[in-house]
Image (tube, rainbow, N blue to C red):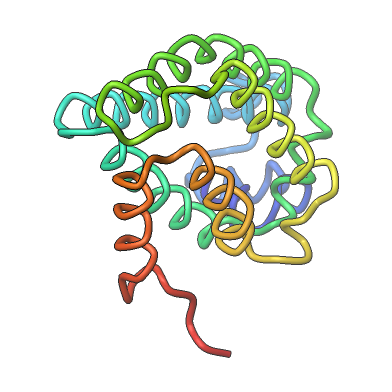
Length: 193
């Protein structure tokens, strides 16, 4: 997965993987029938680890804002380590894309509960249709990916200017104050060019 993230999926050959793992290519093909199956299993493993990590953060955090900001920092670090080509390459693997879409559907009710938790904690506005908000975030994500905005802008910039602006719109004054403090933190500000 590190090779795929660094170089892009299509640029990594099974020989590269075998050499990196110090095993024969034949051994890889005894376990995985092709690159898509290997990628599929890698994505599943990554998602499981990420999901478990976020579950632990959710249980140990006092509020939804801590969880959101932790997830943001994790995502930014991931984007920094990932070649943008990876995101366009992954769309060429239907089994992986179907899995990711199904995973997204499964987490729908969890995310809705998360948004309602934010309302109960006083960070999100109570007079919002959160089902509609979830559709908006889905549409934003699809727009970002289908228009390959990650090729024109860093994903950090996309998140900061699209996702955070949208998130800010559903926040109460209390939520906006947390976001503003976080965004003014020196490690979050973008480096000067």
